[in-house]
Structures are given as C-alpha cells and as structure tokens.
Image (tube, rainbow, N blue to C red; front, side):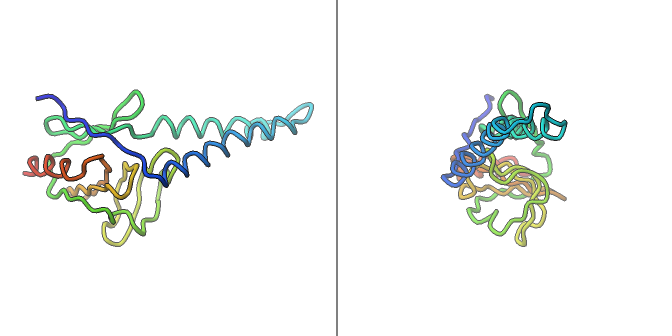
Length: 165
C-alpha cells in the first residue's frame, strides 16, 4: 500500500502572521546594522544574528503535509518527518472549533504554523501540527491528543477511523 498524502493548506490568518513576522525578523538586523557601533558588543551581535536564526528555525519546523502509511501518521516537514504511531488511536473527528480558546504552553503560534503543546477546555492539553485551524482533525489516544489540519479533513477522518482498534 502506498502512503496517502494530504496537503497542509495555510489559512489567511497564518499567511498574514507569517509574512508580518518574517518581515519583522528580517528588518531588525537591517535596522541594527545601520546603527552599528564601530566595535559592536557581543549582545549587539547576538541581537543582529538571532532574528534570522529564529526565522530559519521556524521555516525548518513548518508543516508541508501529512502522510498515512500502514499504522503511522507522518507530519511532513521541509526535508524531514515527524512520525507518530497510530497504535491506541480511539477517536478521530473533524472539529473546526478544536483550537478555539487555546493557550500555547510551548511552541509556535503563527510563524509558519501552530505547532507545539497547547491547552484549552474541550481538549485539555494537546499537541498541534496545524496550518489552518478551520480544518482541524482531533486524534485521541490514551493519555494524549493531537490536532492536525489536512486539506481534506473528512477523508482523513474516514481513513483514520479504519485504523481504530
């Protein structure tokens, strides 16, 4: 069986946040370089280097898509994958409101995605690998919950339900 691949479309909100964040992260070093003293301090040099590093890290962790293969969900990244076993999956459902009211505990809330550990009342703590919150699919396992956002949530849910034990 060949893996089934789903795209990870970006919402309008994510596009705007990513564009503004990238512009800011690129503008900071340019502005600082224009004001650079003759012999910059270590802190000043870090202030110039850190924003582009943050931008590159954010891009490296962005989500290109999702792949279902046998009993694994792959989160497709630029040049690498995050692999998640589907063993123990007991619920898969599309829920466009799944991430509403979420608080980020650790991760990224808008630079190339909503990625990391979040919490809200309906889901409790969950890991998100999301790019368009309106396309949220909630996966529940014993002791953990994931949220992904494939281009076709209904088809993803249908395929995931076939894997529920």
